[in-house]
Image (cartoon, rainbow, N blue to C red; front, top):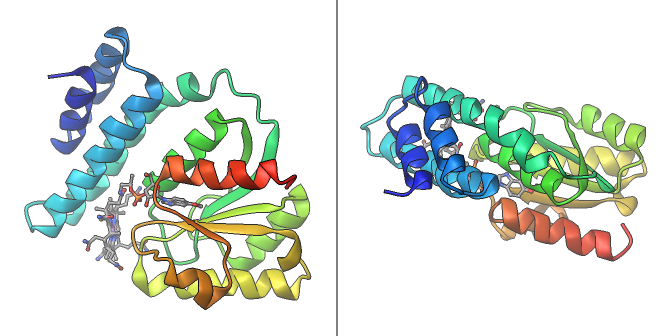
Length: 213
Ligand code: B1M
């Protein structure tokens, strides 16, 4: 089994005590930190989601999976982002109002940062007013919203409305992503792009950066 597979398995088995040692083992065996994060941890969380859906894992297991992932990221994050210069952006990134899922957003943030973006991560359960303040305060023209809960999809529209009201909508590009997003939401809320994963998010923001944003 490869080092990355061992990390994935450690996460799926919720081995919080052992996740840093197996992550170290994978690094020592030559695995790239970003590959461990995306293939090991990202895919591991997806497997955990499937186990929850099939009734094998409970909510407490999901919480532990999130903590286990964050333990591994403590080691990987400085390695992934260490050389990065944060020259592009800023990108205002957050999970929408009512949504506290942050694993995917953390991966997006890490990969954007590693690609040279200055990421202003506002965290989770972020209100439209906080977004407007962050866009204004940072002079940002790039915004990324993460949403995993279907009942919170309306929060996307609240952000768009608040940006319009503040006279900022025409000066920002907005990307969305997360398990419950679909291309139909772009038209519904007047959004600009949807990313299916962290690498896709980078592709979108790089494209806008290349256009001078
Ligand atoms: Co929750 N949860 N959860 N949960 N949880 C889901 C999302 C769910 C699909 C599980 C299920 O029922 N099958 C379901 C939502 C159903 C729906 O509405 N469609 C659900 C539910 C219902 C809930 C609660 C309501 C449960 C309850 O309390 N009864 C509750 C809600 C809390 C709240 O937010 N208010 C809840 C709570 C939790 C935990 C706290 C226990 C935990 C979160 C821990 C944490 O994040 N720190 C949790 C988890 C772990 C999940 C699942 C199992 C896994 C999510 C995850 O981390 N995936 C999830 C099931 C699933 O998604 N299949 C589920 C791995 C991650 C790498 O992928 O987040 O999709 P993802 O991110 C990807 C891409 O989507 C994309 O890139 C990322 C990296 O590749 N991406 C972007 C994400 N954001 C992007 C932004 C971009 C671009 C790409 O541009 C800006």
